[in-house]
Length: 257
Ligand SMILES: CC(C)(COP(=O)(O)OP(=O)(O)OC[C@H]1O[C@@H](n2cnc3c(N)ncnc32)[C@H](O)[C@@H]1OP(=O)(O)O)[C@@H](O)C(=O)NCCC(=O)NCCS
Figure 1 (cartoon, rainbow, N blue to C red):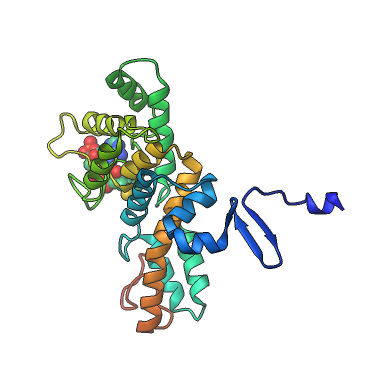
Figure 2: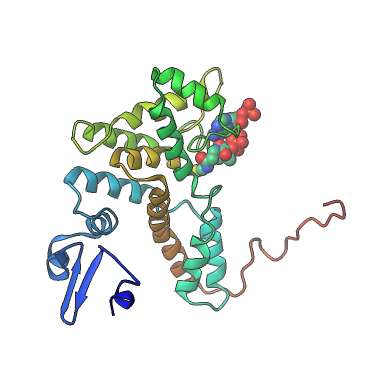
């Protein structure tokens, strides 16, 4: 029977009738001792977080929960809520909108920071080389259509990483990397280019040693809170078949497109 049992192999959960153990901790003890953020870290990283890890992860999750109904993921969840589907379907609709361009830039940003840190040269030089050779003129994690010149979420997140930088499990180097990228992008411009939510949370995930792919998963979890809140609010408000604009507006018809 081992070929059947071994079909799924996991270090995450052990279960028997009357027993549930997550990463070696009984569910009873986790219910008593862990909050949700600590449990998220335990489940995805294999052990309970230190206080510093819990604080930083929690801050990154809080910072990214919502960015209003103009964010495609939130708008889509609200529209779905007026279509007669359940709350879970509305949430999935919103979460499925998160990708490389919307919501997912943190993964690319963390990869960029890591490329900078692996270069064997002074930080200023490493940053300018990586920016110069980046395949897009837009450096992920920087710039914002709405928040100029500063995204209000960036500074408190940077301050928090700085405050915990002396602790063994926190890699404080990412703060300087992000700030140097921002300085170089903003140099000689009348208005600076903001470090956006992805730029700032990538510093946290880098400081925590989280892989770029998993950082996107954490972002999706965080934004799920906003998606759920908006989907639920829209459900309570009612509305049927709400499209992206009030029905009095029409799209542009063009035969040239
Ligand atoms: C978010 C974004 C689409 C906004 O772009 P935008 O509306 O063109 O931004 P602005 O109009 O304020 O740009 C002003 C100037 O800064 C430049 N700029 C903006 N973001 C930049 C970035 N990330 N890297 C380099 N230059 C950037 C623009 O090219 C523009 O330069 P110009 O004046 O020489 O033409 C853009 O910043 C971007 O793609 N950022 C990277 C992806 C990302 O982090 N997404 C998550 C957003 S929360």
